[in-house]
Amino acid sequence: MTCNRCHGLMVLDYLTDLEDNTEDLWLPAWRCVACGQVMEQGIVHNRLAQEDHPDSLVERLQSKARKKHGPVRLGV
Ligand SMILES: [Zn+2]
Image (cartoon, rainbow, N blue to C red; front, side, top):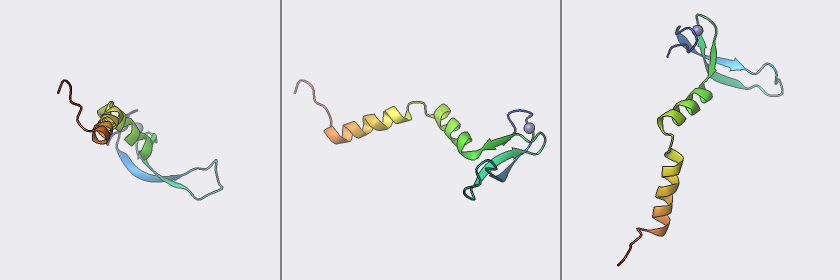
């Protein structure tokens, strides 16, 4: 895991939302030890999922439709 800004070492850290003190919410996040860049873990995961599987949602819906309706036979 390297920083997307300076390619420094990223470490897993826990951050709290200082602007919202209504609840004690600690977020696991990657923090760069060199420049202090912070990437929230959830954001990183979502971004990777979209890049790796751009059609995954469509594929899931298509396979679900096939299971629901069964194989489609044409001309039989
Ligand atoms: Zn950095």
